[in-house]
Length: 474
Image (cartoon, rainbow, N blue to C red; front, side, top):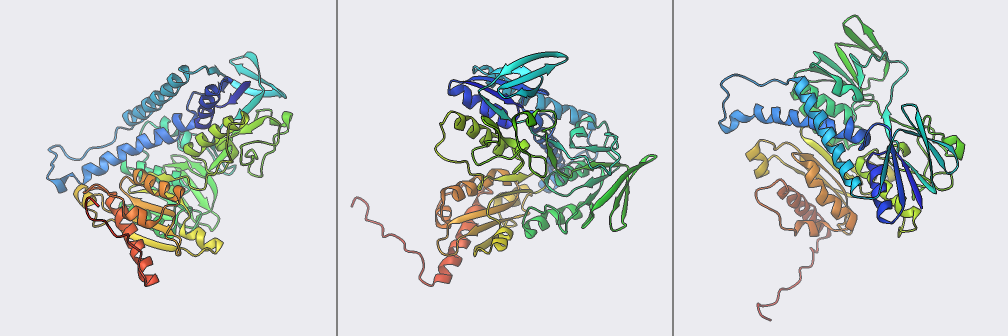
């Protein structure tokens, strides 16, 4: 079978590896570089930049541990910081290339366009080649949304794609959009020395998180001197000499030296020839797919950001792998993304999985909500990272974990335990009775589970049956 993939991001290279393992003749077509936006311009570079912010934060509290500096506070050299992020991105892209070279996947560099059913034409600097396919996967990703009302020069008014083009720290950066991306870049640039004005179109930052979760991050931002403006729906972004003017529909005006637009992503579907084979798009321009990643065109699949939904590298890889397996009839069921974890790399980090309290309220589902704060966690007190909480969402009758959020140091690592519990239908008793390391941040997971278990026992009035132990040797 000739299996062709348009796009070499997480969904593309995951599908390529799976299809090759199943014996397909795989051709992966990529225009920019292996790893896609995730590796080259978005997730990997941004988290590299945020690691700089973490280093600076550690230095800020070094005196608590008795560490002194003779030559004053450190500062960020933006050129070197950006160069390091570029190096990391290139290193990761090469790693993907090396892994694919161990397989039978053929990588073709260029832009692919569907010219007729069963045929993709690849253009690379004016040279074209035709690649036939039996099954096609579209995984071309997404790009930052560019609002028509914004005067974007990609230098003073820029998107996440141009962050790695910055040569100096902005004096006063206006961050337009307070979702995960906006908050992460607020974190980095504030740590680098920029004055930050963060604009949220909603009544809270991080609108996809529960209010109490977002509030911890908001309080941290404010304590570090950031300005946050709520309900700021932007209508204009203009350049005025050496300043940027951002205007909201309620008449408010915000003035800074630079602005970064973090207002979401749009699927990369233009110029792919999707109309030639009848691939349908939704109202936001993303490709319409079913639970098996099939589009409305025969033998054409789509996965990752180009299909909208949860725009995460992890979900893209899962979708790509599933699409390849489905094309070969190797799947045992449809793909569920209900219990996929995600993280926001602010200080502290935010990580969530499964059902939230807000969503449970919207759908009318009764749940137990248990909160456990991290201020007494011994590892957190030792390191100075003891701000945050663990929030567990459980079924009130069975104690089964339905979801959870962690706000705290290394939340991205700890969330895996809750994700596993949610995915496997485990109870809080199972989590409470799982041994953990002392001292560690994971201790608080156990404490939170114990609290949820005790609340359920107190409510039932009967307790939880504990099996009798047998004498040693019985």
